[in-house]
Length: 289
Image (cartoon, rainbow, N blue to C red; front, side, top):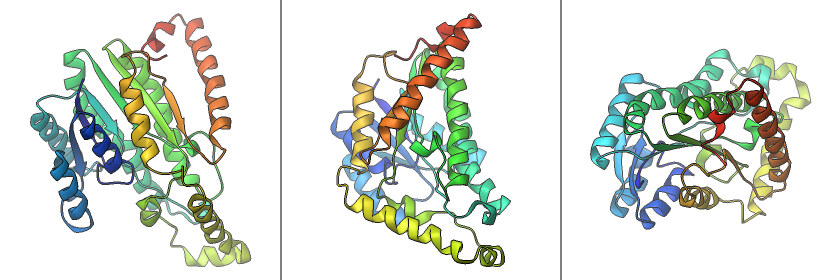
């Protein structure tokens, strides 16, 4: 199982993961919205390292179908799919327009669904595959000013819970990766509110999100272990594990939040197994440790 497709390969998690996989002997293809512009240098570096690049917009079904098919063709197959493409958002929740919320969900939730619908016929036909997903620690809890982003990742987690069970009988294992905040270009492309009139109604509190974000940036700067390379290491470690014995959720965090999320995940794991056991379908969980 050495043929990997990574969506959002030029992003903060995608690039180091791709380079690590290539160094480990994997065949890697990845998607970018455009090869030119801000991605040009990264695309050139990835191609020089051996990656195959396809242009694909996960918010468009035709583009996604074409991009996944192109990646499978260039790889000569597909064993591992890493749903990594995503977008962030930040700001007081009331100020976020429904259109902005819809855009975040279109990338982080429906985008994953489009990719899965394009890739799964191939994986089901061969009777084996591994699907990884980039979620977030705040896909498990919600923190102020990240309401829209958290909601999209909570939705992703629910969808993947279902994919985990529904695909197990086809030999397709599922793994969620839950990073803490990392210093990546994610913060440069955040969807933020543009409702100045409502923002004014919040008075002094309207300045709090910016102060909070600055504090987070300082914390990340002071925590050198909290870097995107940790995601690459996690992906490699997961893929090195025997098929069917990988954990369903893996927390990646070095700022102290991770242990609490892991505790939460352990409880949910037990609750989920108990509920499915009571319904007589616990075997649908068997493709994860």
